[in-house]
Amino acid sequence: MHTTMGSFTKRLILLLLLSSIVISANYLFGQDSAGFYDTDRIAELRLTIKAENWPEELDSLRVYGNNLMLAQAKIDGQDYKNVGLRYRGRKSFTTGGKRNSLTVKLNFIDRSQNHQGYKTIKLSNALRDPSMVREVLGFEIARKYMPAPKANYVKVYINNDYYGLYVNVESVSHGFLEENFGSSDNTFIEVNPDLEKEDVKGCKKDIFGNLEYEENLNCYFSNYELKSDYGWDDLQNLTKTLNNNPDKISSVLNVDQALWMLAFNNVLVNLSSYTGDHSENYYLYKDENGLFNPVIWDLNLAFGSYKNTGKGSDLDLAGLQTLDPLLHADNPTKPLISKLLADETNKMIYLSHVRTILNENFRKGQYLERAKELQRLINVPLYEDKNRLYKGADYEKSLTATVGQKSKIPGISELMEKRASYLKKHPALAILPVEVSEVTVESRAAVGSKINDFTITARVEKFAKKVYLVYRFGNKGAFQKTLMLDDGKHKDGAANNNVFGTTVKPTNGETELEYYIMAENKGAVTFHPSNYMVEKLSTSLKDLNR
Image (cartoon, rainbow, N blue to C red; front, side, top):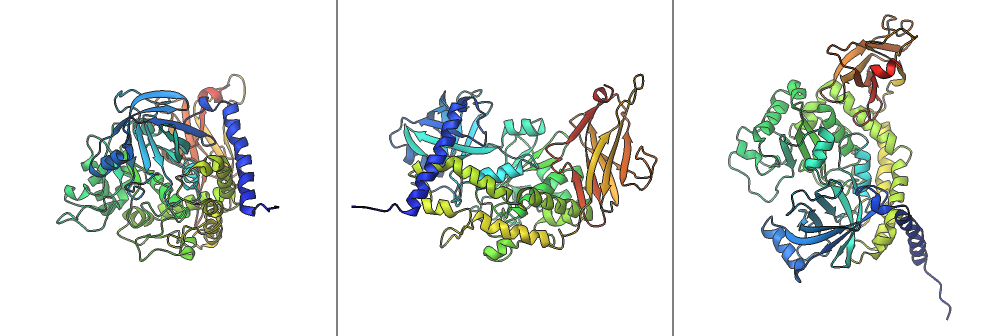
């Protein structure tokens, strides 16, 4: 009897064959020596648990306490004894669930035990993400512009049974803080409001993690979790300054990093965040300069999977596609947005960040190609995962079409193609920004001469109104800025030739400079390089005098 293979089956076989080539290549070229969070690989975690009824015990630990279950772990072939294991997540946890998110503490007993420096492993089950790429893709975009966790994929086995394919997200803990801020002992806050706790008498209602000021310190306890040994007064001072003295906010908050986070949330329609109804899923860390730095977290509901802004009911697809880039700009209950954007310069910087994220990731479909690459990587282990949350057909169409009759999770390109078009034409973003190019640093002109300071020039076109050099000596400490001028007096050539210059003179024997350019015209701001928070320009007197 002759049978015809269905189109779905053909596609599945082809996907499995192509993906097996990718996975095999990872092993052939040394997967075990790769970084644990390398994005273009799949890690392997094998857990051994002695308790026969471990699922029920993990349920109990999650529901009734904060303890961990003892287990053994093997990560990419490397053994670790006496690790701690528990289920994690609020929205993603279900009693009796076969695919709950997991936390593995490698230093549960041995405080020094780690894998490549990482002591805690956070595994996401990708709730409400049939594509399985929202977190990995989202964090990859975020890391271009601000400190954000690494993320990739891991195959999890429990007692030699394949438990499932998980998203492996770097824990925002001491190691992350040291790497990104150079310290980890200062005030550290997790903003993840407990929605089940009753309101405290005398406190404002339903403010969640929106950073409104409260005179009673007890009012903060149900909306914020202190991860450091101290810091409640610091948090209260941050909210007091933000709400009552916003002109002083740069003395306690890394304003630019906050603007990057807010721009990211808006462009990617990441509403399970400060921008959404519960003002949640971010951290605050006070760095060595005394400034709080927001750090984004939990992106499985990004790209419109969560739909509530806190204003009215859930948005439909059209509402998500046309989410206002200035959402909450006039909302007093969202002070991190409304207070910051009330300052015209902050508003232009925020819109510049929106424009940068949009242009560099979504205008030419870059995100979609990357999403397809990630899906090709995970096809085999995903289809082998018997506990996966979505059917293969839903996974296949999740990039381009809505999945689910009730939850209606939008396809990523279905959402972002029209969103990119909408943002491009939005009046707040349609202003033509200045263009910065030809950034140079004066070096020694001849043998015998010597450079003792830093003279920097840049070509800035499209009707620049002001151009600044933003700099610091070395790679630590706060940045300061100075005007660059096109007057023919700052080694900028002829006056009014669109070349701007300035000279920075070391005052205490400094020999290295880290810097970027900020330029504005009447209605827009441009930065060079565009991802200056992550990759700044640098030079040294030693190099200039070669």
